[in-house]
Length: 90
Image (cartoon, rainbow, N blue to C red):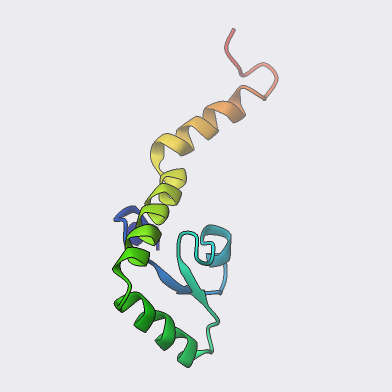
């Protein structure tokens, strides 16, 4: 999922597990219920005929994926360390 997002692809996924915590419907992906084959088919058909929506979702997915990159994680780690008494910069 994150690799597809980082590649700037339009993502279609099901609302299972932690997926909805990463993806937002019509913002950075299209989400469907896991047992709704007709809904999945409709969304895929819609994206197949709407290249602008694919580009918009792909750009937003790439931006979202950056929050999970090493640079972002490192900055979060450093921020956390500076909140621990005695572990921050002198």
